[in-house]
Image (cartoon, rainbow, N blue to C red; front, side, top):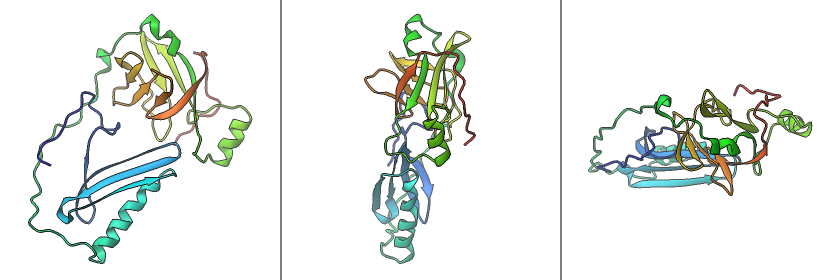
Length: 214
């Protein structure tokens, strides 16, 4: 790899780039996941080897590292000493400036409200299952979109995310936060960070019954 594609939306969170890691060797790759699945893909240029892992459970993408370590430790794959690892310069990540975001538009009123994540394939903890059974809401199972200070905002804490904040419209119905997290309300399926969700109501004053600090 001697050059890098720079996406139009600069982000460290949205799967738009390749990360450089060092396990037992120089590695290029990316991990990802969502509600009920996870994945990883890595290349090891010095060993002319790579893998793709897909799992139907949260956090299962961590199994790739011990498996590749076993291959290295048992000398089951051989290092190619002639491989030249290029030195690639890159720009430091710069969050978007929320002061430049699009002011609230009347057409966005249809997006305001509470959304519930579709958790098919995602194993909830016992306390969360009880809470849902009682009809309670939380900032893990639900997301809120609302107007504030003349801008559109999102409030969510799904998967260690506390970047609920001001939104900028990239395309009609497609929004990004300052750190590049994506809220896609174009339909027919709505998503936040690629997690599917459905709209519950138009309540703009809703407070979550349970606020989880993940």
